[in-house]
Picture 1 (cartoon, rainbow, N blue to C red):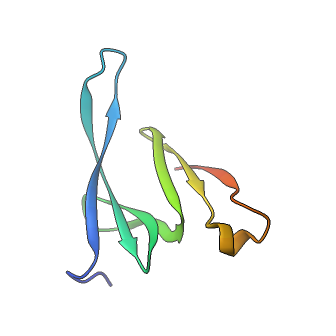
Picture 2 (picture 1 turned 90 degrees about the horizontal axis):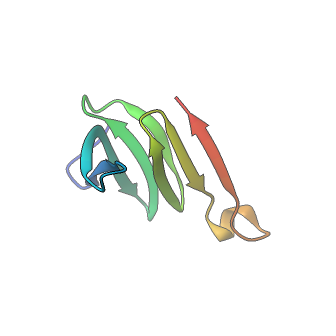
Amino acid sequence: PFTSCYDFTPMYLVTDEMQEHSTGYFKYYAAGLEGVVDSLGNMVIPALYHQVNMLDDQLFECEYDWDLCGEGGAWITIAL
């Protein structure tokens, strides 16, 4: 369960016209790592990553923390 001590940031997509559009997803930070929840507070991506970026409305790229990976940062793509 999430509590008010978590830091949430709205996620946006930028269109070809360079306009930001709200996505209904929020990046959250827990213990220095990032994850994603939807507008209802359901966990979409657990806070396991050093960085999470939204590529489109159903595609995210996530970077493992250097210390967790052991051989430097590694990126993965998560499709919903």
